[in-house]
Image (tube, rainbow, N blue to C red; front, side, top):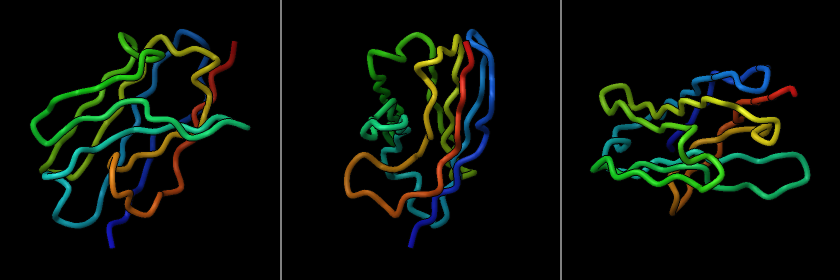
Length: 114
């Protein structure tokens, strides 16, 4: 069973930056597309970005140009660099593969104050 552990969240002022990390247990990380999701209070979970095993990247329009996803297969870790943060980015952030979800981790809370 793959376990996902997210970290790096916190409280930041609008315009600030944070770098999130997600580490996966198991040896199949490198062959999977990995994504970052977020869930704001009262809203559905949404896909923010994903990166394929071939490093093809997708961003949701709301974060394009501000967020950067990357991965380190040797560390079974996917990162999300978040710059120019806005209050509407406030959410719990999770990682998972976009299809055939593994069990969700606890997520990491990002709070952006105005």
